[in-house]
Amino acid sequence: NDNVYLAGGDLRRIFDISPSGLRDLVVLSFTPSEITGISLEGTGRAMTLTRRDASPAKAQAKDTPRQVSWQNDRGEQVDKLAVDTLLAVLSKVYCEGYLDDTIKGSLTEPVIAFRLKGTQDYELFVYAKTGEKVPALSSGSQSPFTLPGYKLEGLEKSLEDILGKPSESAKH
Image: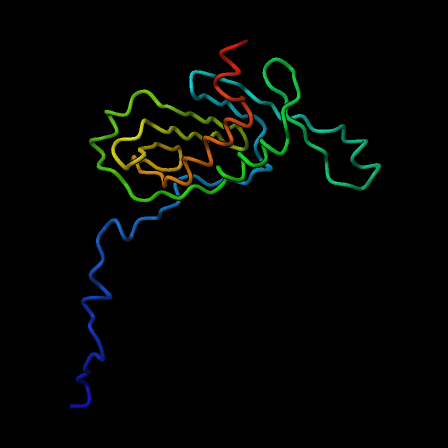
């Protein structure tokens, strides 16, 4: 019969995918240039950063893109490269996998918290490491998830670059 077809391979391997394999692993995504304010909390310290644009007339006169600087809540200039690095790390966050929704209620005190203001508000909360997993919550995902270790290291390094080392803040 010409209407009968025979598969040339193992179809079970192709179609047997777990529900977690179908989920999108991007848990936070934004364009860094849209961010106008950042609130950082970590290692017992907190800071709010505000983006300051150069005057529009100055940017138009030179035909160059608008110059951006960042100031903390005390009005001090913050290292632009450190803030740009943090925004690059946060602009596209992928998770390793998702946790059971029942765990969401047990996540109460974040170790690191990022709140970003832009065209919309973005949040990322990282909780204490449990075993090999780093649980986290994000405004871009309704379910709790685990962050890869390298992403946590990048976030901690960015926090240290902006907030300073913990021992330095203890002296002040």
